[in-house]
Amino acid sequence: MKKTMIYLPEETHEGLKRLAFEASTSVAELIRRAIGVVYGEDIEDIRDLEEELAKYRADRGSAITLEEYLRQREARVSA
Image 1 (cartoon, rainbow, N blue to C red):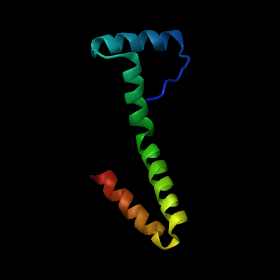
Image 2 (image 1 turned 120 degrees about the vertical axis):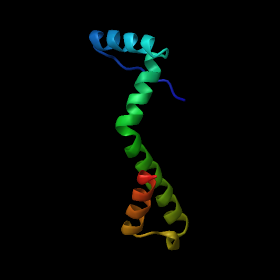
Image 3 (image 1 turned 135 degrees about the horizontal axis):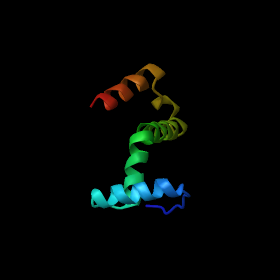
Image 4 (image 1 turned 90 degrees about the vertical axis):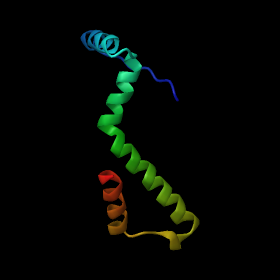
């Protein structure tokens, strides 16, 4: 896990502190969950793309078509 610093409006921070207390968790965990909900699929897509690119660079014969990639992505999202 990496540490990062963000600046929040005071009202947002206070609201998050209350929510964290009510959920028996931390503000950091609430932020991680929110990022996962909003950007999780995009982050997975980037990771998948990087893996496929590395495979392609190592062995150009391992490439898949865009249609196959989209089918695999749809199957993963539907699961």
